[in-house]
Structure formats: structure tokens, C-alpha cells
Image (cartoon, rainbow, N blue to C red; front, side, top):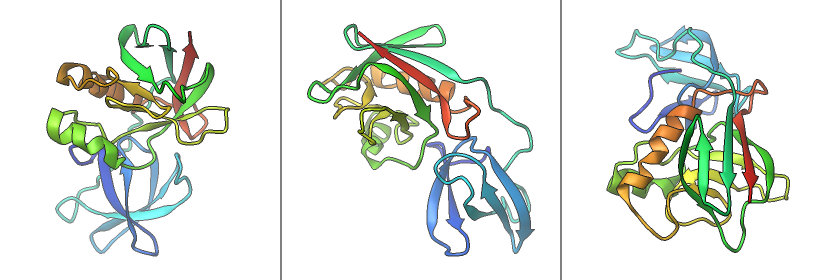
Length: 200
């Protein structure tokens, strides 16, 4: 899927209920019908795998989807809790985790974004971080289900790109480069874009 809004999301309708929801850029779908100016499709990966949805055609005739596969090999990230550096693709950026509820050590899957996260909207509006509402869930094994990889200046136990307590546009915008690196990556399990190794 290619045609999304300026934050990397496409608003679609769940079928047959008509409920609106958003899917992330480059999500794999299978178009199974076109009628009445809409494309009907089945989501083939992520948290909504197997769900049916529809979206309007562009100008009533052009598909919003591409047949080419943009996906690349799984990402491998490393986060050092002590140095507060996140490494990926030969780059190192500032990141941190919550002091009271730090992300545990280990290697964990990073999942395809599930839905726009409203807490990231302020970074889009005020600091021009384009993809700040796209959060990647981290599947830790400590029983905490809401740890995410995201941008920001505070963390409640997530892995957060930025510097704790500081809002500096240059650092926050490192997120967009990481997002563009991750969003096309796939692990082959239909759920994740890669892994992050958390260490001291």
C-alpha cells in the first residue's frame, strides 16, 4: 500500500460495519473486489490480519495500492540503556527508557504499527516530526504489553527516541529517519519488522 496521508496512515472502513480506522503505510493487503468507486480488500499482516476493509479509489478510478512488494529484510536494532544510544543500519541516535519501569534486557520483536497514537501528535504539530503518531510495539516477555518504540521527551517504560526531559527539534526529527528505515522491514512472521536487543 502506497497512498497514505502525510503522517503515513490510510483511513479505511471496516467491512461490513463501516467503522473508520487507519492502517499504516506499506501494509500488505489483498484486493478482492472493486465496485461503486471503492476497493475492497483483506489485510494480510499486522494486528488486523484477516480483517476485511474498503477505501475509495483515487479520483474514482485509480487504485491506492501497488502490486510491487516494497518489503526488505528484518531490522536489527541495539539499545544500550547505559549510554542511551539506539543503533540501526550503521547509525546511532539518542534514546532512553523509563527510570521507574525500564525496558528489560533481552532481544524482542518490534511489531508493525497498530494504529495512530494521539500522544505523538504534538511532535507532529509543534516540531514537524512527520511520523510521530506511528509507534512500533515491542513484544517484551516481562508481561507488560504496552511498551512501544516511539519519539518523545518522556517514557513510561517504552523505548523512546529523544533525550529525556528535553524537546529539541533536531533530535526529535531523528525519528523520521528511523521510521523510514523500519516501515518497509519485515521478519516474515506477518507481525514484526525486526528485533531490538536491549543491553547495558
